[in-house]
Image (tube, rainbow, N blue to C red; front, side):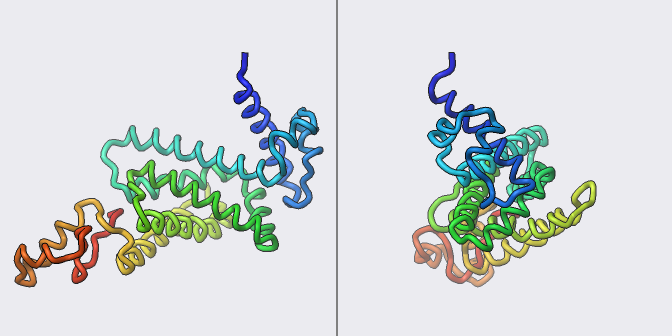
Length: 242
């Protein structure tokens, strides 16, 4: 026997599937909860009680697709052996576009609607940030503090820029999208180093600072006077995802 929570989740999933299906041919503003409930074979009263509104259903479906993409990427990475964080991020972003490939029409309608509806746009941006947070956590990023949040926002920007190319990429292997992701990641890494967002990376800042001190003739005492988290004001931090 299903628990009330399981029943609610099942109803939400059915409604989200129906809303997502209708979104392929209708703008978000044209979707109606009663029509969605009818297609999902759920009573309108239950639909309103569980979902509340159409936007909640859209966001629920996006979260489901993002979780699927992350879990499938994780399975692939675990089978691949040693993989750098950058390679994990690149693979995860690419697979996310592969998961969304059958739903270009829905994404195009959401993008168009977000330009006219700031509230929807903000909620979609928050949904994207949540997806990127999960992606980075899967890749091994600790996401600590303001630097971690900056990396989340930076990766969200990468995803948004790549999505513009993905919409017009009809190649079987999405090679054009892959090249755009790689280019945007390099750009984000450069910004991260400039703004000191990447922080301690694989290999760590401490190693690079020590090498910098040695090259400049510094001693261990100089390093002890640097800021408390180990970053040197005179040395650019090592790229976290290299």
